[in-house]
Figure 1 (cartoon, rainbow, N blue to C red):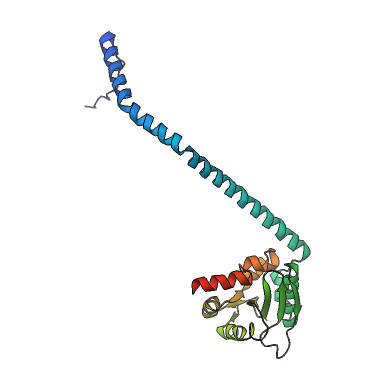
Figure 2: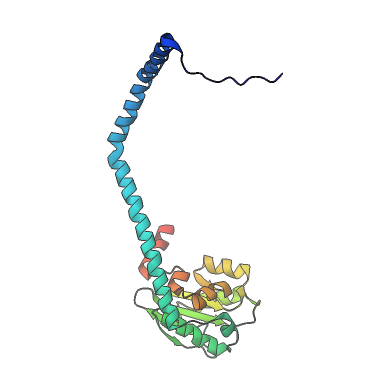
Length: 227
């Protein structure tokens, strides 16, 4: 036999109505202190809540403003110069060096191509009013080929002692071995592989944004803190 579903029914008669009213009143008496306490807590904490809400709103607005500014800057850079990876792949070694120089100039650096025989691991040298001096070692190669750790050693050994660089970067239209990447990250030799080169040359991301470059003073301060 199916069980009947039990449903609440409305009070009937004066006695039941009075009883229901009494139960409701008792519940209000029990809950009133808790509701009052919660209200007092909200009233006491409203300045903190208001400040938190204001800070969140300001932070969100600032984030959107920075994002819009970054998009406008990238669009302006692309209007000045945009290089496709297919076009870069078709370049010769020296043409690749000149292309990297032009990308630096687009991003606000004064730069020159210096690569030649005996260049001591420097193909392009640039100067920035805030970020300092940068040295690029260009490795134009076949798609799929990888740059090894030996190149990172060479750049580290000459970038600062020979060329007075604050920033050392190896750039390739190919890739890097895992060891080369790891060694570069440990010893402050930045690397730009094919994926990063696409962001830089095709999408208009500035090199200082791509590599998260900092001013020399900030880098020295960070180094002392880490020590």
